[in-house]
Image 1: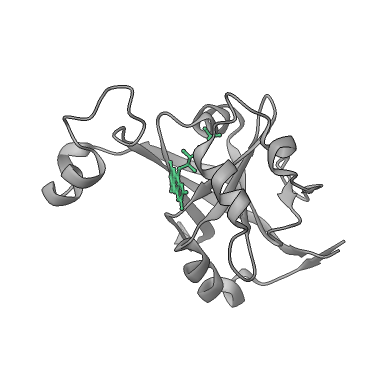
Image 2: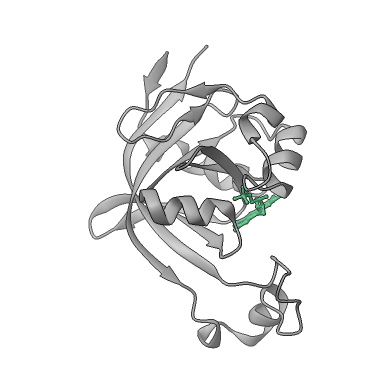
Length: 176
Ligand SMILES: Cc1cc2nc3c(=O)[nH]c(=O)nc-3n(C[C@H](O)[C@H](O)[C@H](O)COP(=O)(O)O)c2cc1C
């Protein structure tokens, strides 16, 4: 069961939960979910939007680029540590995260990417716009910290993020 909500009433919760990680779900070859700590609720081109930042190396990115949609799942009172470990360090390229973490998926309303019952606040989005970061335009101290040039090419914590602006198409709470 779901209860439709006005996402504006949850801006403070989203801001708080981002500090410990919320979830970015995609559904391409299969359902996958990864932890994100960067993102924002807002308005662009007069439309309600949620923006996420995804590094090149993520399995999530390959799914996002193909499907053009995503769903964000937000816990109501802090993260589940086991979810943070599995969804925030392992890749959907190697494992089935639904099985590994024991996620309870919930049928989507307006896109094709399910929400997750354990993280009830659900924001369904369709990608309006995406753009890869231009590293030369990022302030030096930030660039050196998040995109070190001496990082190994295989090091997934060095590659640039792509920004995805999702138009919010449905927002609700998943109820048991
Ligand atoms: C607290 C936390 C916040 C994170 N935030 C982001 C983020 O905003 N963007 C990103 O690309 N990766 C972020 N990650 C890393 C991904 O969650 C991680 O690499 C994940 O295993 C990728 O899964 P995938 O390969 O199935 O897409 C974060 C991880 C943690 C633990």
